[in-house]
Amino acid sequence: MSYFEVLVEGGSDVPTLREIMTRKFNLEENTHFRIHPHRGRGKLPANLLAQPNPKHQALLEQLPAKLRGFGRYLADDACVLVVLDADDTPSDELLAELRAMLEQLPTRPRRVLFRLAIEETESWFIADENAILAAFPKAKVQKLRGIEPDAVVGAWEALADALKVNKNAVTGAEKHAWAAAIAPHLDFDNPRSPSLQELLEGVRTEIELNAA
Image 1 (spheres, one colour):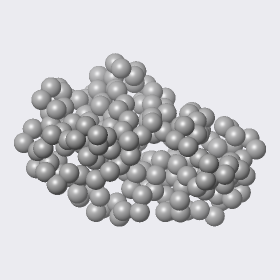
Image 2 (cartoon, rainbow, N blue to C red; image 1 turned 90 degrees about the vertical axis):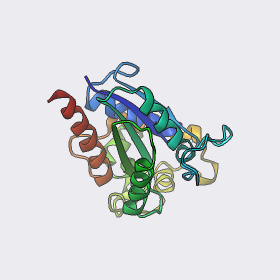
Image 3 (cartoon, one colour; image 1 turned 180 degrees about the horizontal axis):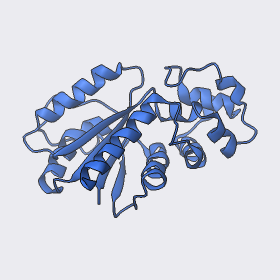
């Protein structure tokens, strides 16, 4: 059976990744996967082999050290899944930076899967009108209909507008609540978001490698 260590930027990403792993792939949390939230994306350290500053808890700042640590004890058939918001960084550029970092680590897991949310995980929500309405029946989803899937438009702000929430007052706890409400209704069979589709296909491939 597959095992995943899942690294995400923050707590608001956890409900969606949990839903993917459990509902889509029938995996059990703490048996087949664990999710590790961080405090934002951050940036890769200049020295990839240095011990990270414990005060810096962003994902990219911690990533090289965590990958080195996983490489020392994870089984060869385990996978580290790293899910990042692309924000306004070109996806090819960000993925190339991540892969180059991985190649420079003297100790690393055998299987590492990098996947991006383009622009951010809220992009997956605003591409799925039915999921939003199932969670928030009074949402003004017509405000989202002109947005192309994965367009860089300020996805969480667009979602806030659709939910009639003051963007200036949105907290991390509120974003987590949105994710917890919407994620159970996301269409994982025919997602409109290309980056969500790529994530699902990547996880499926990793699982199939173990089943072969």
